[in-house]
Length: 172
Figure 1 (spheres, rainbow, N blue to C red):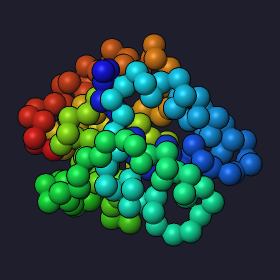
Figure 2: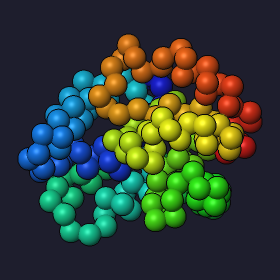
Figure 3: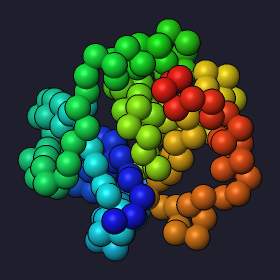
Figure 4: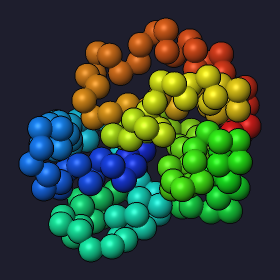
C-alpha cells in the first residue's frame, strides 16, 4: 500500500456537493475524479471527527457522504488528540470557532500521516500558516487538495521547509 492519506471532512462533503456554482462544481468533479482514480493507490483513512462532522445537521448529500467514508479505517480521537488540538487553538494556529480543524491537524500529526487531504484552504492547507506551524514544531504533514497532481504532490522546496520544522513528531 502507498502513503497514508488522512481525508478530512471537506473532501467527502465536496464529493457529494449539490452546489451549482462554478467553484463547487469544480471541487466536486476534481474530488470524484481523485476518489475514482487515486484512492486505491493510498492507505486512505478518516477519523471519528470526520464522521461526527458529517453526521451533524441535516444537509443534502449527508447519507451519501457517510456511506462514502464508512468503509475507510478510522483514527480514534482520544485524549491525546484533544490535548494537541487544544494547544493548536491556544497558540492560535486554528481559531477556537473551528476547533474541528485543529482536531484534524492533530490526528494527522500524531498518526504521522503522509498527507492530509483537504479543500480547507483557510485553516489547514493555507501556505500563510506554514511559519506558524514551523514555530510550533508541527510535523511535516503535507496538506493538499484533491486537485494536486501526482507529480507535484511533494515539491522539494516544501519538503525541505517542513523537514527543517520537524523536531520530534510527538512535539506536535
